[in-house]
Length: 245
Image 1: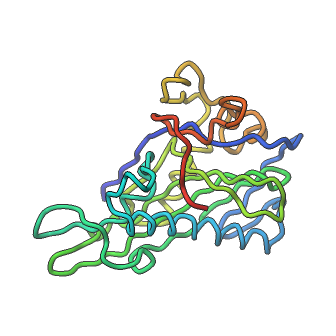
Image 2: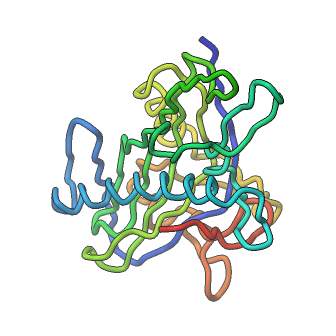
């Protein structure tokens, strides 16, 4: 089984002051020092899954109209809005809604101690759909995993979510394996990595996601200028991520 790990970067995220951050984790099967209520966690999880699916559906419904819709700078959503045309040998916009051929599942949410910032790993399952002329992808390579950052100013607020595209994983045959491999990269390999955007090439990550000072000190949470933070910028074009909540 062939696996593909894609290494990308976008300078993302936000700093919200909350002293003495202690990382809290929520995996699919257990909770550890969860700083939000179980009800809030369920709302966060549902919002994240809807966010991914809604963005994909947005690009499916607005094909190639780049004068009026934002470009998906990080290719986090638009590629999932297409099917492959077996006759014309080209990708075309999917003829059915995204929820009919995709399943989005949150695997991991890592909160900071006050629950206002979080790191997210989300799995994307693409169901194999074959017809005489269209298909999704080849059977056996149906699972991808991507990461996101969520921020808010109050626990009662919904999250504002941004892609965190240092690492992404594509083409696995198992959901949990894809998510675990992505988690390994962020929890064990992020520290010491540099940022690929030219503005940040002389800087790098000094924390892994599971380090206790990640949410407070990581470069990705630092201000870019007087009004924006590094998490809000595209890794190449330095424009705001326009993705839907």
